[in-house]
Image (cartoon, rainbow, N blue to C red; front, side):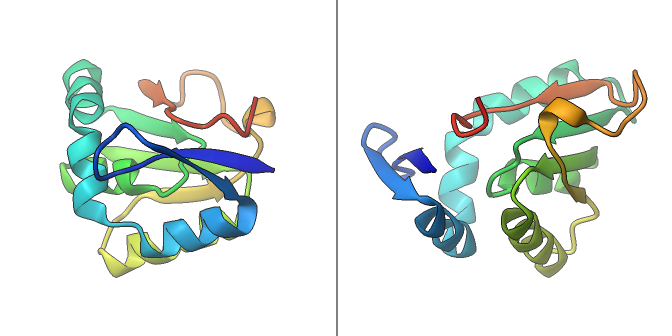
Amino acid sequence: MVFFLKNNLDGKRYSVLTENDWVSYLARANLFNVIMNQQRLIESIVKYTPKNGKIIEIDCGSGFTSILLDKMGCKVAAIDIDRQVAKLVSKKANDMCSRISIISMDILNLGFEDNSFDTAFHHGSIGTF
């Protein structure tokens, strides 16, 4: 599988990554740059999620958006089909004292009841589709 990653420094260049490169990137990704590039997304999610609402990130990748939302007081679940990625996100979340729930699952076979979440979001994953 090949992934395309927008360069976090200038937001214009794209890199082609193999699956092993992606896992390596997630292990060393710079949280500050990721947050700055996702500010509008995060503001919209917070704006449209009811107070005490539940949020799910589909194909969480680095997990940074979910971790940041958790740090802002949101209740967040993050899912990714790749177990190795979910394990890395779980480690990052623990290192940052985040309470997000990280689950490895296929988005086409979600194991949640209807209306379990108030907000669902996904960004930047072309590998799934």
